[in-house]
Image 1 (tube, protein in one colour):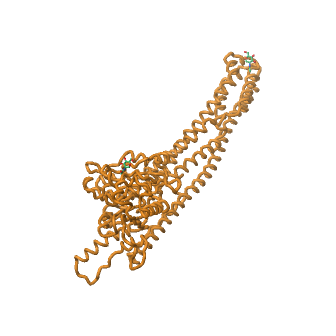
Image 2 (tube, protein in one colour):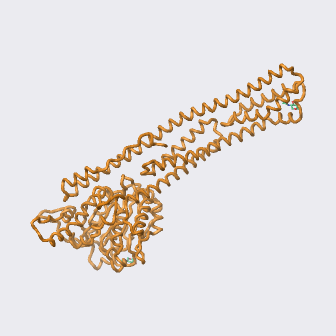
Image 3 (tube, protein in one colour):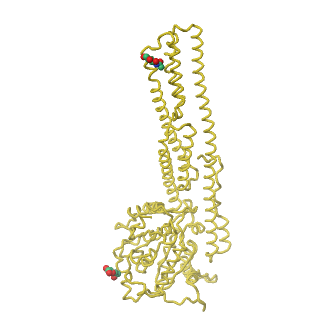
Length: 592
Ligand SMILES: *[C@@H]1O[C@H](CO)[C@@H](O)[C@H](O)[C@H]1NC(C)=O
Ligand SMILES: *[C@@H]1O[C@H](CO)[C@@H](O)[C@H](O)[C@H]1NC(C)=O
């Protein structure tokens, strides 16, 4: 949280530069990248000089920040961003996006205005439209961009004919209309109405008179209905706030320096209820599939969308999400492997482990942490491609650590035998055993060395192997000493040779048995590990599935509640066509 808590002022996130190109600001991107918490994103749109910034500053809990009224010229056209800790939702960050200069010819060409509006829709989870006076046709015209959304945004890559209403209700922001300098009484048909009712009445579509043959009239009604239908069908949770004029026009110029006492009390109360609505009920930014978006992800999405627009394409949410999932999953694999290596490195001082099993258990412990980290970050890894990749990389890392463990054991055992065999070696080269009875003395010394060796703790998993190699290295000398020992009869020599051979065979068998036991144990552990991973994975998939079901349910409820002008059959058709959430995979395709 430190970074965004330190964000003392808004920065430009997407700039409409002098060449009339949309450009992502690196500094803003860096700030987003440092935010790992989920976000509530509130974007405000509307004509310039309608008091948008005042509301945004209020949400940030500040008087100043987004510049107000008089100093507005200094601000670049585009989208400005301010990230602050969420005042109510612990562990969330409130991201405020202020669109700047929509419809303002002084700030250059309006060619990109519709794109700036689209970006506000795509990046936010709550869209606020700010207008002056009343909700009338003129205000509706300032919001004409909504009628272009269907041409300018694709939700699915395969989308053909316009925006899918269910998808919109699922992924588009909530909609709030702020009417500033509002002077009407909220009365309709002689009855008092709420602000929300005022909005819904204003958004009501006009019925076409079926008897009318006038095409002009038909067009007029369609023009009237289109923006209203778009607002109703694309967005959800329609909400309205009306605001009194904040202060006398003389004082207004100095708005940011006025205390609440100097402002109209109604205006102050209205601003408070506006903020409290977003603090309590502001939607969290999600991607389709109820995937919570953090700052880093929002930054990537912004880059994807701006790139698409610059290349002349229509930004597509599905494509952006696929690209995002790819980069997030790749990073998730990297993070998980790094975690595994760091955890294993902390065990390296325990190498060599007493047994193979002990090593294997250390590995499992670290692998579990790595997988947990991976699953926490990865999403939409539908074909388990990244899971496979992670498994491969972890297997390779495990091999490396296994080799380190073996090497530590070999080093330890070789050094130990080197020390224990000093006298034996010295006496061999001093020909001490080349005499009658020398063979017996040689065997006694060999026995002593082996007994000391066997009792020594900490030799690790290669103890037998190194011992065998040691014995093999003195085998020829043993034969030479035996053959040269004149105190032995031929018969005794034969028996001694048999014994030496039997000993070698016994060692071989011991090693083979140990290997076999190790494999058995590993297989056992592997099975346990597999079952455990399956449990974790199936749980994650079940959770994801549940989230999608809830998301579907919410989208359906939103349609049923608010798409008042839609016919019953239309609604039923949309609901019938809801795609089923994916089934958890059969165990076969799970590889972790
Ligand atoms: C607010 O006050 C500061 C210093 O007191 C002044 O510099 C600034 O111009 C004032 N703002 C407006 C909008 O008058
Ligand atoms: C090694 O040789 C020395 C004489 O050089 C002898 O005193 C000693 O007992 C021998 N040790 C063994 C273990 O054979």
